[in-house]
Image 1 (spheres, rainbow, N blue to C red):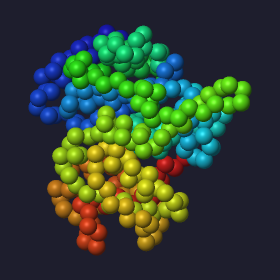
Image 2 (cartoon, helix red, strand yellow):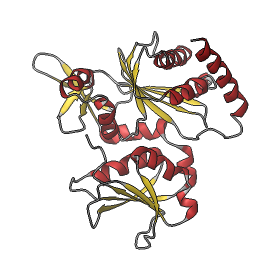
Image 3 (cartoon, rainbow, N blue to C red):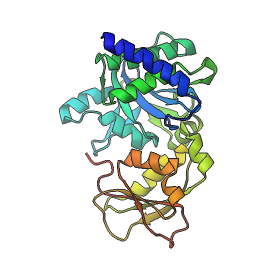
Image 4 (cartoon, one colour):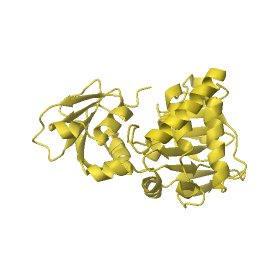
Length: 297
């Protein structure tokens, strides 16, 4: 434990020293906290900002893998029955059109969801508990340390707090027994996601992305295009690819595009290879081809 504490202290001062030297990734790290509360958080080292999106437990989510729609609060049981850990994280990526890098399970409810200072402390405490293995997470230790260190640089005025209940993105539906659940309005949800989870560097690069579906499952190009747009990108949907591919890939035909932040971010989301290849027939800077491995169970 002493070694961990020393490492944390040293790491924190390294962050303070190097924060202006751009030696750390520019991109956001977006994670799902679940337990007594369901919230998607996103920390941006570049902007030194931290965003919170609170989701009502009775919100209906379409499950990845074709299990139908479930309330968020029911996913713990569903994951155990189907032996599908982190199924909620994968489902929210599709339903919210937002890449989620990992999740922390077992999070306690913040004392005050409107008091930003307390929210920052709550975030740090839950990251710390994950480092101590008190919380279940699929995030690597290096990622947790990065989040913990950088959260200290976030000022109260750079903390955004939004609840789906207050954002008018939900429609309340009542059962005959008086119980209620909430349905997402996709269009309004996307507006909200773009407002707080966009990647500023993607907007600055201004690259145009073509997305094609190389699988037999329809709608994947549209689904992934939504994620790119919500991050701040510009998309041209190309529909179906000429052949089916087992794995997704990202293609570029100019070296500077291949080294762009957008390409690196999309490759991270898809966990796929980046290939230099001509595609002059398409009026785009980057070509994303969705393969059979996308959202595979």
